[in-house]
Length: 316
Image (cartoon, rainbow, N blue to C red):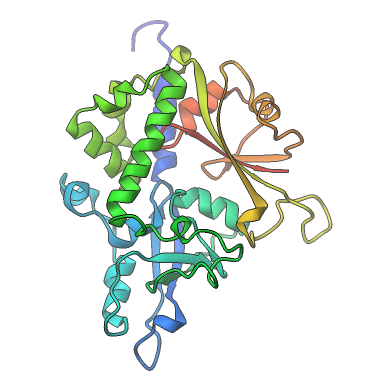
C-alpha cells in the first residue's frame, strides 16, 4: 500500500465478505400432513447462508449455480435430498414453502432478514422451520389470507428462474437508485452474472467482487442516493414490560416494508425519519445492531446485501 493510502475500502470489503459468509443454523421438519411413513423422518439440521432464498437453498446449487466446481456447493444435505424420499406417493419436492411456528415465510426475502424479523432468540439455538410440499392454500394457510405467491416460489414458473429474476430485478432497482441508470446490470458479463447469483446461493461474497466493480457499486462517493430497504416492526413490550422488539412475529401485518432512496451524507437516524420511521429504538443490518448515528455511506459500503440494497430491520 502506498504512503497515505487508506485501508478503509479493503476493510469494508473484508467485513462485507465475512457478513455474507454468516449462516443461520436451522432445524427443519417435514410437515405432519406430508409424512408417508409410520414415523416422521428425523429433522434436518443445517446452516443456511444469510443471503440465500429458502426455496433455492432447498434444492442446492444446480446448473450454472454449481458450474464453478465443488467450492460453490452447499455443505451437507438439503431439504430436497433429506425429505423427498419420505413423501407420500404422487407428491414431489417442487415448489416447497416454509413456516416458522405456523407463520408462512415469504420466499422473496433473504434468509437472514426472515430470521431477524421473525424471532428474537439470540441463544444460538437453531431456527425451527417446517417445510411443506402440498400446494399453498390461501384460505387456510395464511394468517392474513394473503396471496400464496408470497410464500410459494413455484407460482408463475420454475422456482429457480422466478427467484433469480427477482434478485436481478432488485439489483437493477438498487443500481438505478445509486447511479441514475440500471444499464450496467444489462451489460454485465455472463460470468459476472453467474458469480453474483452463486454468491447469493452460497453466501460467498468474494464471488461478487468483480461484478460490483463492473457495476461501479464499490464507491459510494459517486452515488446519487443510497438504495435502502426498511423492514419496520411495531414492537410493543417485551417479557419484562419494557419496550422491546415484540418477540416472535405472528403475522405479516406487523411489518411495514419500504423500498426508497435516502440522502447521501445522512445518518441512519435521519434516513429513518425521512422515510417515516421516526422513533425507531433499534436497527439491525445483517443481524448486527447498528448505531443510528452511523452514516449511510459507512453502512452501505460495509454491510450492503448481494442485491446492493442496504437492508435495515427496524423496531419501533
